Length: 436
Ligand code: SAH
Ligand code: SF4
Ligand code: F3S
Image 1 (cartoon, rainbow, N blue to C red):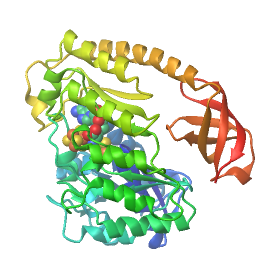
Image 2 (tube, rainbow, N blue to C red):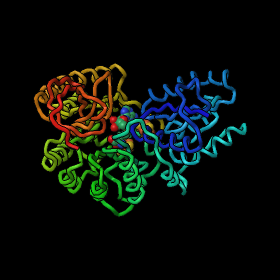
Image 3 (cartoon, rainbow, N blue to C red):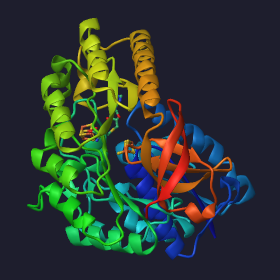
Image 4 (cartoon, rainbow, N blue to C red):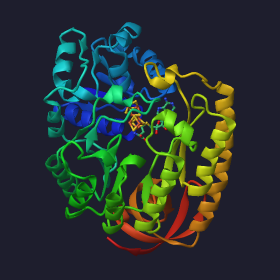
């Protein structure tokens, strides 16, 4: 039996798919080369904006053709859109045989059995079930041998007024320290060098366990073989001085942080219920720079939030110019049903959103080309992750891609390179030394 998984959305959704692969492979399923050759097609969905919703429906339209060739083939939908839409999705898409969410991935074996028996296996729950930790008993199946995601918490207790995640993923639940550390140990024994801790609001990990997040960083770092640590997504409000200090002290924590600002205007931030002002965001950036020498940042921005004026938007541009992010993920505000911002007055037109987005991208392009120039002739530590177009590729500690000449013997090695060419999205390096 063969499976095919199509994943949309964030890194947590990708890690969920890696776990689902583990579940399926433990049942004897093997990966299919393409969806046409699969006995089970799963779409792990995202519903953060309207666009990902539409993509799911168009993929379902395509995948339903499988049933003409292979009438026993099953189609499943899981993830955030499944959780948000519930039964309504099955009505819209009658070809769906299996449906579940991130709450009950561990029940997939039962659901497949039910669907094979000719029943619709629709299992959507209001809240996460008591046995959801069973999920961690399954391994993940990953494509990247050297860098691994480790989900450390589920859900989110913030209430950003534009966001569906608290509804689709439920309340914040921290995974136990013991469970996290045992997965990290298993991963490094398998050859993983870089551990990327994941949570929608990862810096809040431990609040429900009475353990501060920095303790998790120290514990992960103490495991022999962990060469690099990253974590995503940190929320500015939960990023304490103790966390910043730990990031500076722990040599494995990389000098890069994704710290979504969302908007520059404090008035808009308040309407978004982000819990910080523009000035407070700058204070966090300065604190991080103080403790973590050479740290670089990336961010998420929403343009065209309800009531955003020209002046408000200028504030967002000001944040870009002052922080000089190495990467900016910008999104047009997309009204999501049942979120507070959906009902706000002053919704922007698509024209305004597009125009602001273009201006933002142009400014960021300039900033990025200056940043890229500054990398030229510097020495960087790179973890070699694989090959691309005949060249080795890896990332610097500051999260930039580097290509260099070399052979397989360098895979999984941390090397020192000199940057000989630097473009906005990639750099060329020459090997100086193998470090680890
Ligand atoms: N937990 C993370 C982000 C999760 S969603 C955090 O708090 O930063 C990823 C990004 O999608 C968000 O940072 C935000 O920029 C964007 N996003 C979320 N809801 C959105 C919406 N309704 N419209 C447009 N962008 C949205
Ligand atoms: Fe959504 Fe805000 Fe939670 Fe991020 S912190 S997942 S944007 S509610
Ligand atoms: Fe999308 Fe769900 Fe992630 S809505 S961004 S897949 S948490």
